[in-house]
Length: 368
Image (tube, rainbow, N blue to C red):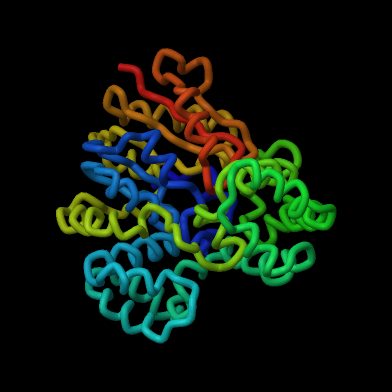
């Protein structure tokens, strides 16, 4: 079976991401999924389900990490078995004594492999499945031990209050962006610590420049330009909960849409790389691709090769959406006759990106 480049280097034996750290609103705006057959990098599953809420005709969630497949499966089953209120309880990182019972009610629609995984790791369920990944634990350490060195809980609470754009900028400049904040940020979000505690070090193989400097710039945008009070990703990093706003796959108005799509058989999980899926299903075609930050982990040669395969498996007018964190990747000039960038759309959406780690959002359209 064909493997992706990163499969030869990184460790995929543990849950890396217990939630998707990319803003689903950007995907909906970029891919316009209504009536489209979508291929979506699985990760923890949230954004694949959000595409169903956006009206996708079908979603194929492709994921090469077996533990992440188990995460997707555990998220899929509650849509089919629980009310929205019950559905939120296993996800929320707040005290609860019902998570094991609710998860048990969902067992019948999970695969045998997924049942085995969660039975072997009951603490992941008991503690809330939204917080059991390596990346989420990285943020837990940040908020428990590092953030208090710069800001008190009251100051964090104040940051997350609603303010006008002018007031947000003033609060960030006068109160939040102090010397201690910048110092701890540069250490904790360095390539070394992120590789050791958050992401696999191999994910930084093609990164150019300072990791911390670039993330700090985007963090300033999230805190001083966008509205922190309405940012579920920022809330979770700083407080351990999403606050009053939820990512798209979790909001009440999308719940029945996702449930209906699942009942209609419009969703499937494929446990492999994209390359292996294409090899196994040579006739399958797609209209939209959520590619997460997949090219971050590839050299330029492999990036071009996969872009070529994606276009080959596309219908005319198909859309590709993906993020760059620190490794610059996009359609090369040699593919100008096959793939058209949509920079205005990408920049407009990126300006509103609430999941603020990435330095660039790329949207491209298949010519044909």
